[in-house]
Structures are given as structure tokens and as C-alpha cells.
Length: 259
Figure 1 (cartoon, rainbow, N blue to C red):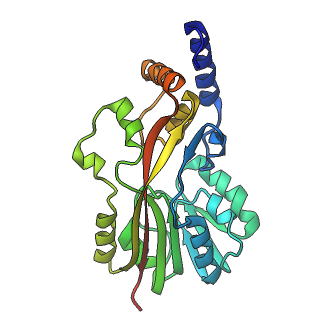
Figure 2 (cartoon, helix red, strand yellow):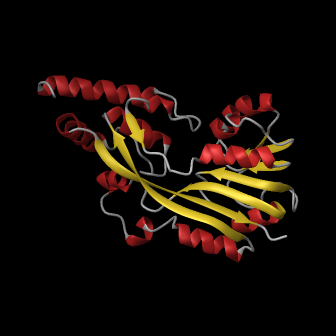
Figure 3 (cartoon, rainbow, N blue to C red):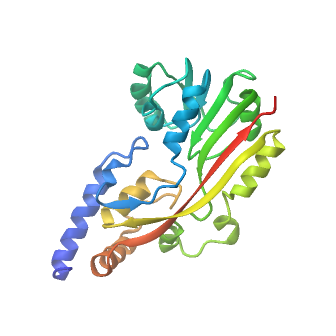
């Protein structure tokens, strides 16, 4: 139960200050343990990706972060990862080099810095953009692209709390059916395409601040100072009514290059 207005304000200030000071480098969300929860997709991406890596000879992980690769029991003899965000490049390099993975700094735009037919497996977890023609180019005939991606209107309860109702073209972006059509237009065969809507809960305002600082495209240009009134109101809502509930969307896509 919330305390006096003064106590609630002090708790708000402490939670926000803590979340504003913590590092948001990399894609490890463990700081949110106990402060937020996100239901996981049923397909178990890390396990399924690890199974495919264990059978591959040459693999590329795009926009890596490094966390999922580093957890893989068996990596291919040749494993390469790309990353575009400078803080993540350093973290991924430190994490993956001891495992024999080459980390390449690469902007999130074509072309990929690799030759044609270089890999029999390309993976990517939550890419910002998928350049399908480049993926098709670097895949060997018979090779596979395997990816878990953010789906349409993901966590939009939180986005629209701060930005207001979003237009249909924004809510409908990142549509899995469109991704499948683009993969096929690039010459790939879609062998699996699944979408799930998952429950996400934020238990305190610090979790909200940390999430919006880390996932910077949710509320572009987010700062505590700019959104302090909305944050204070949301803090009061969480303190009085319980966790803020949103819904994450994720889709799995697997596409193969014909032999």
C-alpha cells in the first residue's frame, strides 16, 4: 500500500534515480529480475538456435549482443557475429572472443561485409531491420535463416501511455506475414512462421525507466526529465493498483535458401 504523499514521492525519486544511473549496455535484462516479468514464447528460441548451431559448419549471428551465442553448448567451427552499437561491440567482443567467435563491427544497413554463399546458417534475435536480399546472398544453397523478431504493436500499452494512440501504420509495422513475403521475394522458402502475444508486467517505475532507456525505439528520445510528470502518474498507478500490464508480441521465422 502507498504511504503518505511525501513517502510516495521519495520512493519515486529513489526508484527513478537508481534506474537512470544503471548501465544499459548490451542486451542482458537481468537488472529487471524481480522488477518486471515477460512471458517467453513457446518455441524456446535459445534452445532451438543452439540445436541449429550445433549442426552448422559456418554461422553468422546478426546484431548479436552476444548473450545467446555465449550460452550455446556447441558452436560451429566458423562462427561470426555482427554488431552495430558501439557499447555492444565491446561487450560482445569480450564475451565471444574467448569462445572463438569473430565479432565484426557493422552498421545496420547493406551490404553485409561477407562474400556470397559464406554461411550455412544465419541467425538473429530481435533485429532492428532484416535485409532479406543480403541474407539470401550470404547463405549457401540449402542454408537457413533462423530468427526471433519483435512483432506488431509490442508493449504498445506502455508506448501509448507516453505517446498517445499510434496510427495503424505504426501499430501494424513488423508484421510477420510481411516478413514472410519479403523473405520469399528475396528467393527464400519460408518453412516456419509463428506469432505469439505474451504478457509483460512492470512492478515498479524503475523497471519502466530502465526498459525505456534500454529499448530506445519504444519512446524515441525518452528522458526522465521530459517525461517526469507521466512517470510520476504511472508510479502512483502502480503503487495503488498493482503492476502495469502490457503485451509483448514475438514471431519466429525460419527460411531456407533453395539448393
